[in-house]
Amino acid sequence: MIDMSTFFLALMVGFVILLLLLLIRVFKGPTLFDRLNGLGLIAAAAIILLVLIGFINEREDMYLDIAVSYSILGFVGSLVIARFLLDEVNRK
Image (cartoon, rainbow, N blue to C red; front, side):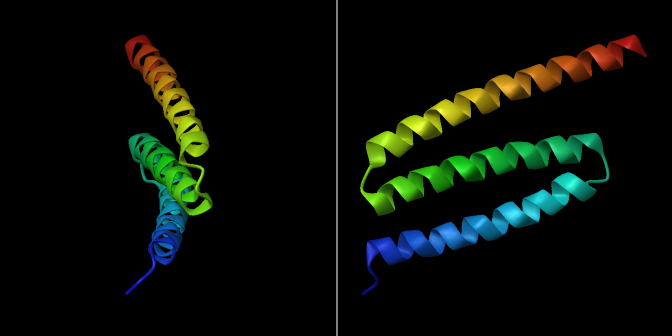
């Protein structure tokens, strides 16, 4: 039987590989929207990684607070970028 910490560690390795692939999409994306989508997915994967780290360290409460704060910052950042892009489209 596999231990839960080993399972969480394997999940973390998978998410780190996913983050690296998403970084390639961000840097080599054919369009701006592909790059923005990659940034949003990186933020989501980072939030999941924070929660997994919390479970491994047995400090779920602390890491969950950090993950929620990071998700709020990511949401506000997405709104700012969307507003900027909307202004750029309306200028043309």
